[in-house]
Length: 87
Image (tube, rainbow, N blue to C red; front, side, top):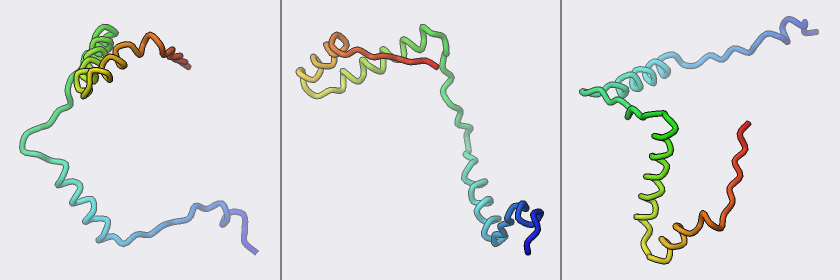
């Protein structure tokens, strides 16, 4: 009969070591570039977030192909009610 200690012991998984080392080695080499690549620094104030959202919406409208689609997008806020639940 199996004891309770054996049943509670986590299972050990053994993986082939050379395979793992080659995976980590390749990943480590691909992380580096000649020049550092930093993410864009964004202003996190409410005004800046609002301005970025407005600019994104403006670019979206600008990229629409037809005048009808642009008019629909411009007038859509009048007809759609969005409820935001924060919690």
